[in-house]
Image: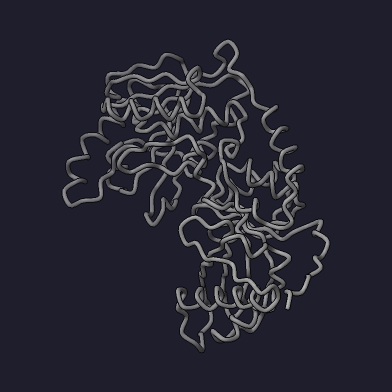
Length: 398
């Protein structure tokens, strides 16, 4: 007996979407969405909900610098009060309209609650129930079960349970959007690319570009901040180097529309004519400079960025004004704080005596180290760098 043929519904014209970002970056992401002519519906810890067309969903995946993921809401179900109820809610979704059984998939579950729960929430167990529901749906309706791939699935299904309300999302991003594709090597504690872009935007790098701007990272490591600065200055969409998105295996994916948007974003890239923007970095570790040089080459910004092997205190600005954003070592082991205090004192002294007229931003997870800079910050922000709470202090240097 052959499997039944399922008729697909016509693709929607608008979708409810959720852009995930590092904690503390939400206002920057909201501004980015506004610049894409998208009206945010709601701001939540760790992301922004918005509505958009298929074209806007593609642009979000390709263009948003601070987002980690773009999630598309497939279905919302209320009163999910047990694992069996979750299974039923997932099973009843018309998965044949989402993907075909030859595609691999994986499921993750997150939860947040402000109300008392009447059943124990085990995200791993709930993910298993959801996976079984999807597989059982395909078995019944097509006679085939799609394979699960936990490492590199064609599609990622993400479920979020909040106060008995279940939201089922398709992850349009696939691999996290911070994975731009240029960083083949990294240092010991690399800064995620989307957080680096967020720091630059918070520090005002984009607002100075029309005047011609100069950027310097004195602790450049593997080069992430410099490359993101060059991407912003050149209007290079951060997703253009990526080889894979989650929507490639989505049944509503329109390849021609995606390629058209990708081509239009490529056409917007600006050359660095007459060295309008000067971006440079330095580090005391020559091995890291080698890594940075390779990443810069991968991103095709060799002509934009210059590197120098030197300590920060030995440098002098080549321009009367500019922006410094840096992520100096802040240590995670016992005794690191004491050994790093002189470094941060030197940062403050170098800011004060050698970089008057500049603006600066420093990221650290240690307030005591930031206090050793001994300058009054113009702004303090609390951010999440992975699971680590960090502090971003900005300074006007006079």
